[in-house]
Image 1 (cartoon, rainbow, N blue to C red):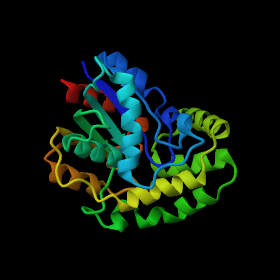
Image 2: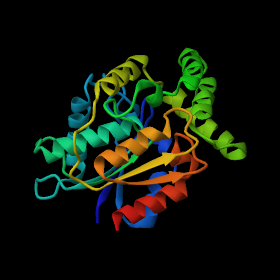
Image 3: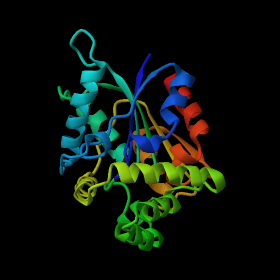
Length: 256
């Protein structure tokens, strides 16, 4: 049975998965790890590396310590959302190249991601969303900021949105995100061209109502790496939030 490793995106931490890890574990029987990227969440208080390779090695050492058997890292399956998808793809390439600091990967699920060599900047960040991004960066109140993030990334509404906003506001107040960490993550993402090839099965997932990253970016990743693609017609950028059960079923299929 594989271990799933879930990687969140820019400025997001493990708490932002909400109940996805529990639902995935219950559906598949797999162990589920939700390590934070360096500088974020439980890993706050230290800087984020400037390069994708350094981010991967930081994660790889921690995941290896959690999954090792007989002193050897065990293969894992990795889901990466947005920036986490870039990290996951670089991880798979580094593992295939024999990097001893990262565990081998069995399969990938990449959600709402993009790569510099495949998509132009105006697809990787849709121009119409830029005013909202700027307002988010300038927002001082945690609840206002998290509300803006939900507006940009999710199609959830009503009582469900109110509950998620309450949870995310609490997280933002308990573990404030450093602007320096976000800038370093952005620098790493901007420089990351993506691997030339991937030697593991890849499933690409996208929300057709993604306002942040154009869905064509995901389709180009799937085409480049020979992976399948699943598109949810009503989900936004945050497919794990907008279509949790649908995503769990897609991951269960990918595990079989």
